[in-house]
Picture 1 (cartoon, rainbow over the protein chains, first blue to last red):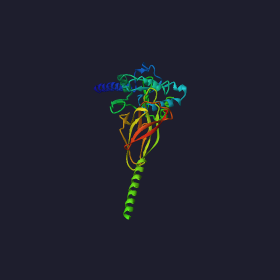
Picture 2: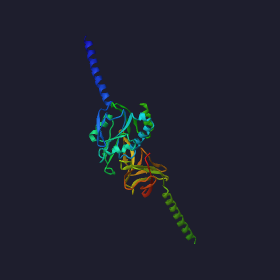
Picture 3: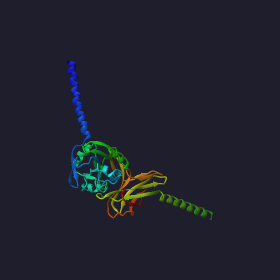
Picture 4: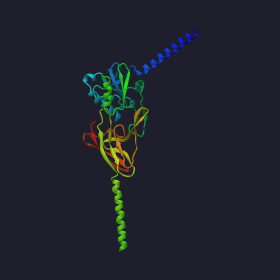
Length: 187
Length: 146
């Protein structure tokens, strides 16, 4: 009898604990609704997102990795059919909260593909979104430089569906090929 | 007479050696493939790439100084820290003997801030770079982003 009660209690304990753990895991793998700005207007995930979204955290004063990644995503898109392209989109989130005109990110990304989305927001908004993805960025003062600061950001494309589930990522894409390979996994 | 000949020969030899050394200094490095991309709309910065090869037997130093086509220029390197990429301004870069400084995407590169003149494709941007204490003008060919 006593053994039965102990077993029952232990089972209940692990069931509850296990459920909580699974909930935490589910929470970490998903990003919930967020709102940033596109051309000064609110842009909300997942309402305005595509079925599959490639999200990149960068900044427009980045001379190398950010334009290269944006260009490579554009090249990868061109390698799949127009019908398949409709399922995807590229979302460039500007993490440079110090720049004077952060909204220029929309103009910036549309040079690579008119469909691409460039988003900006306050530091609090950007922090919230990047944290949900499990990434980070850092702005450090550098008074001996022209810009006066430096921006460290992930060199990674995060693939997130319109349910907020992070399906994978592509690290440091120095050509369109690894991006295309990832896109094809979903076709 | 013989003494004069010896003195003359010594002076000639000394002069010849000195000039030979100066010739070596003027051919310490070679440059290859310098290019700068036109800035994108919505951005006032751009990157430049190329190679400086140290063909000498001694270490040389490279610094980015200025360009009349931009408000400022800097030499940068890309570093990965805590899963984040960031650029580090390099006040100078040392090139070991018989080695190269290769400026390419994802690595060392030149960063150009705020164009002050029109950047026409195919033209060159003159950039003042200090190489081993001497200011040299290196031409960066203007190209469209790939």
